[in-house]
Image (spheres, helix red, strand yellow):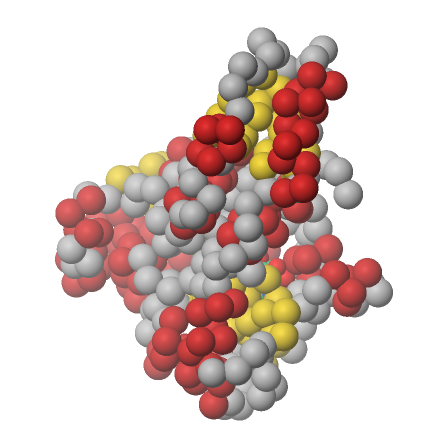
Length: 355
Ligand code: AMP
Ligand code: MG
């Protein structure tokens, strides 16, 4: 099915002022809620990245998300809710003390928890799993839309599968024009990387995917160390989180991640690829140390190593822009895996061409 894709912009003042009641009456959100109730898909802003939502209780509706994105059927979706009370509807059984503490500390916000699913949630949403991923986003437009629809909303990022996630309505339009009926434009996504996914079914939570809430923040809240699911499970062919096995977030241009120990070789590497047009993405600190770049190198700043939040918020827009700059190769500097820097590095590892 081809759609005439509509883009409806929401006023910044309504978003900044978190005017939920007014937002729920906004014509774009009413239209979005109506489409969702009719089993259609709608793209909307969240604080992490733009999401592509559908009724999480309907296999038919959720099937349209997989189709529009070209997403593998075995990669489950995160279910978005508008209030903590809505959690009961979508899960079976209760919360562990740790699960409850995490929700209290980080909801609404960029934290997704894994629990056992209720009957209400379609198995298409969870890709056949008996568990479900749930998040309560903080973005006022997302909350107003979910509330207005009166549904739990399944929503992955609103990009073509494999491409960098969208942090602007324009990115969604570039990827999904003609494939979806509506994009609600709420300006740039603030966090810029996806939510942290945490399995809270056992007493010790396990981080399945680093994201907008850092491991440090989680451990500080809980007062003990959590487990981080690593490469081991994936290498053994049992990914704890099905999405982990896919290449992801990638620009079409080959991308090489420069490890910290390679930082002083940057100039050398640029020389090595002197027959290629190179986009060299470096931190403000590295830029200060280097000068005189060869002519084939386009230097792009990615912000300061000491402010990973800023790097995260612009990361995907940067990858998309580089893809349109006619480059043969992107060289990108690694940043410290501290705080949200861990999520940035996770995305860059997955985007990179070199193993
Ligand atoms: P995305 O929607 O593209 O941000 O991806 C959602 C992520 O959450 C993927 O990495 C999934 O593997 C993960 N996820 C969703 N549901 C589950 C689940 N029930 N168990 C484990 N991981 C999940
Ligand atoms: Mg995604």
